[in-house]
Length: 451
Image (cartoon, rainbow, N blue to C red):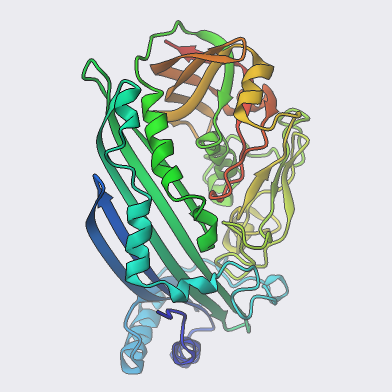
C-alpha cells in the first residue's frame, strides 16, 4: 500500500501558507506528515493482535505582530482549514510578544531535501509487503516451546513478540521559501521472554532489532527471540556483591544511558533554564583526550540520519565533543535570540562516539579491563541535569580476569557524568546500527557501586 503524501495534500499545505498570510500572519511554517504502521503481535507462539494505524497531521507555526503560536489539525478540507487558520491567527494576537521567536535565516535552511529519499531511508520493498508475508515473518521470529531450554535447566514461561513496519513521509514549508521533504521506512522486531529456574524464580529479558530496510532484520528473524531467551537465562542465580570503586563495562545495548545526559546538557533550552551541568563550557576542555563525539546525520541508509531539523535548518557533520573539548551547543532560532548565541541546529541527529583502543567486542573489553561489573541493563534511577550527578539501579555481571563469574542484581551505580567520562578507559567497536545514537560498549574506571 502506498502511503506517501499526495501532490494534492502537498498543495493543501502550500495553501495554508497563503491563507495564513491573508489572515494577517507575517511569517508561517507548515509541516504536513503522514504515517502508517502495521503490527503483528505474538503471544506464546500464536498470533495475538494485529494493528493497522494510519495517521495524518498538519502543524502550523504562526508569527503575528511579534507573537507566535503553534497549532495542529488532522482535518485537511479547505473550508475546515480556513476556519482553523482564522481562529489560530486570532488566538496568537491574544498572546504576549516575544521578539525572539522567528523563522530561521533562509541561508541556513536546507536546499537539497526535495524528493525525500536523498538519504536512502525509504525501502521500495515496503510497497510489496502483504499481510500474509507480515504474518509469516512474525511467526518465524517466535521460538515458543523450544526443548533446548529444558535441557539447559530452565523453562520458558512466556514469550511476547512483535513484528512491525512503518512508513513516514513529511514535508516542511515556510513563507521564506523553504521546501523540505523527508521519507523513511522502518522494520522492527522485539521480544520479551520470561524464564523460570528450577527453584521457581522468574526472570525476564528483552531484545529487539530495527532497520530502515527489510533485509536489515532478516538475518534470521529468530535471532531476536533467541537472544532474549539467552539474556534471561544468563540472569539465573544472581549473587550479591560488595560495593566500592570498581571498573565498569557498559554494554552497547544501554550505553546511550550515559550519553543522552551529555546531549541534553548541551541543549539550548537546558542552558537557558540554567539546568545544565555544561553551561559555560563551550570551547573548554571538560573531558579526557579520548572522548570524541560527532554528529553524523548524512550517513545514507542509517537510522537517525536526516538532512534538516524541525525548523528546516540544514544539518551537517559537526563535532559535539572533540578530544574532551566541548565544541558545540544545540541552539535553535528561538534560543539563539534568548541566549544571544549563534544558532546551530535544534538537536543532535545521529551522535557517533569515536572508538578508543583496539577492542572489537564486549568480550575484548572484559579481557582488557580484567575485573569489575559488566552492566547490561538499568532498573530505574535518576540524574540531576544541573549538577550531572546520577544514581541508577543496574543489572549485569561480575567479571574477574576477563571472564564473567555470576550475575548481580539490586546494585546501584552512582557518580557524576563529568567524572565518569574523565575515567573512560576504552570502547569496543560494536555500536548497534538499529539505534539513532551510535554508542559502543564502554569501559570506565573508578565507578562507585553500592551493593
